[in-house]
Image 1 (tube, helix red, strand yellow):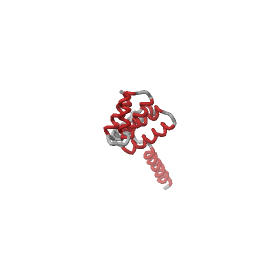
Image 2: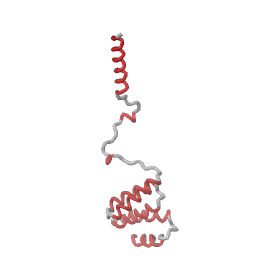
Image 3: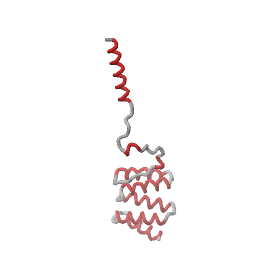
Image 4: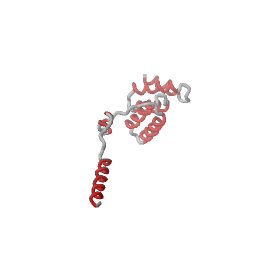
Length: 133
């Protein structure tokens, strides 16, 4: 009976090892190792208005600190998450204007006016567009 008990323990340990061993990947997607350097990965944008609003908020914080390039990146990201976010287009135009990128500033202001033609500041934005041309 002691021998049967020992055999039972060995079988239980082997079964435990089988469950602890990593299983091989079952699909091609799992076989590709994850990218370790986040800077090398590309973001796939889809409609996400919450992320767009978040990026505008972070861009505003960068703008307050005078970090224009970082703010520009966040506003650009916000427009990619939600192409109809008028505030993001306005802020992107302002930052591009401050960075002396007049072509991008004009494009951003024009998109803003398409989205918010009846905004209170639409007249001021039209004046800015005339100055930039």
